[in-house]
Every structure is written in structure tokens, then in C-alpha cells.
Length: 407
Figure 1 (cartoon, rainbow, N blue to C red):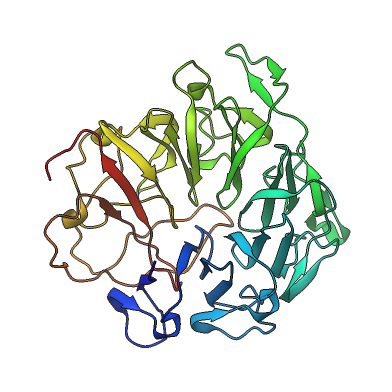
Figure 2: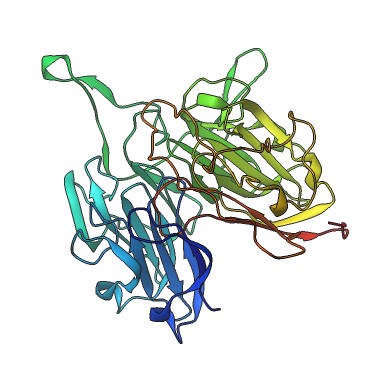
């Protein structure tokens, strides 16, 4: 319940490559820590439902009423009267969900990603979104768009439609004055109404009665999991991150075929910056998209063979792609076939994995790696490396041995 976080500050003094306990959180019981594959800021939610934030703050995404960078967790006082149960981080915006099902938004709103009915540069204080439907139970943020899900399993989206990631059968593109390309953004939550599947001969069929149970967003793509354990994906198709064996953008939710079979459904979904993950109902891990630093693409879901026999409990993704086995000593087992897992590479330089980003997806380079730590059995943890200057420097993949495996 204590908050121990590995921190990688950029231009803020000494990098901290070991667990660091924040003095400001003394006596605070932490329920969850939140960041995102696009974000350079972090959040934590306490057991009492209080929301704290820290990190970069150029657009007021920390919710403190200003745009000053914060170097350690700070309570968002405006939300002090609310019980926060979930939160999500976009590139420069934040959503927070209350116990009563209301959503507060703050940060950048140039593309309408806050759902306030307008487009403004920055909203530095938490503001309730323009929505009066059923109580919200889930939310997620992409780079410049947002998703919310109500208690009936209806999905709503708002923000930037550039790659079809909102799911409304349009990329919103139009030619403005002086031949400039602009986008018709969704400024308030709009229900995602159409779900489809494509047959082998290219026929498009509607998928009726989709009840959404979970949603996850990458930089410019979206995944949902429905009540029948099916997975749908849409948005930017680059590097195969949608799992449809092609790189075409999808304007509406499209069924990922692999999980549409008895006994092969999905139980959890996760989205990285340029990749996607699903945990099957039997606990196996599947991935697709850009899965290593050379941007080799996995065009459809593949099982992580080296984790067969392990029941995956939880997973988190950072930029640029996935829970990446950066250092050999962090590995529970040896990765083998390049076709079925991320690639581990020894590097002579002291830099994190770098990559050539896709168009409109670039972020700053990373700090260097830490020295080899002195723990003996890191079998339950896969460390990841996040190459942006964020307060939460990396994420973990936790899994339990099923059956036990030797390190």
C-alpha cells in the first residue's frame, strides 16, 4: 500500500534508478498508480478516493489550476470532495471517474478531447464533461482523444478523429482555407454505434448486440472487450497494431477474429503506443503491432510462447511499444523465436531502446538505463523502459507461475 516508484527525471537533477519512497506520501495508503503510453505525467489514487498528480504540466493536465511542472505527487484539491475510483492519462490531458459515475477532465482541449463542448488550448482545473446519460464505469485516453463506457455497456468517444479512432466511420478530415487540412473533432461524448466483422472474401457484416465491458487506447487506436469475450479494434492501422493482418486504418470497430472462437475468448485487453495485448480466458498472453525497437510488425495476435504455462494477472504498456525486456537480468526465462516474442538486444551504448516513430507519433528520446541491480530472483517481474521524461519511468508485467517455473 506504500507508493514505491522508480523515477526517471529529465533535466530535474539526479536520475533515480532504484525504489524511491516519496516523503509527501507518508501515511498515505495508495490504491493504484496511473500513467499512459502517451503521457509524461502520472497519477495515483488513494484508498480514500483522493487523486494526486505529478510530472509535466504544459497544458494543465495535472489539475492544479496552473501549468507548472510538479516533481512529486501533489493532491488535486479541487477534487477533494469527490471519491475518485479510476483515472486515465492522455498525452496532455487527464480524465478522472468518481464513485457516482461522473467524469472530470482537465488539460489540453485543442481537439475537444475533454468533452466540454468546445476547443481550448488548456483547461488547468478539473471540469465535469458534458454528458448526462447512464453512470460511467470505465474510461481511457489516447493521445488526443478519449473514451468512456457507461454501466449498460455503451461506448462513447470524443476528441481527435484523424485515423478513425473515435469509431464513427470517419476520419473527420476536411479542407479549410488556404488548402489546410483540418479535422472535425467530436467535442462532446458521442456513442459508438456500429461494430463490424470482415469475412475472408471481404464482405462486411454488422455485429449486433455488442455490450462493451472494457476499453483501452493506444496513441491513435482503440480496443474494446465485449460481454462475449470478443475483441474489437479500430483507428490507426500502422505496424499491424489492430490485429487484422493488414495496416489499413479502420473507421469503425472491427472484430479481431482470433478471439471469436469457443474457449479462445479474451479476458483482458491492453494498448501500448503502437501495439496491443490481450490476455486470453485461460491466462495466456497475446500481442500484435510493433513489438521491438526495429519496428518489426506482428500483423495479427500471436501467443507469447515463452510465457506458456504462466497465468497472466496484469500488464501495463509504455512508449514506444510494450513491456520490453530491456536488460537480461530482468528476464524470468529466455526469449526465443523472433516470430513469437519481443527481441532482446545487448547494446554497447547506455541508452534505452530508441525507435523511428510513425508519423505524428514522435516523443523525446530516453534517459540511460540503470546499473544492474542486486536482486537474485526477478522471476515475477518484467521491467519496461519508458523513454520519455515522465515521473513514472516504467511499468511492470506481473504474472503468477502456473505451474511454477525455474528462473
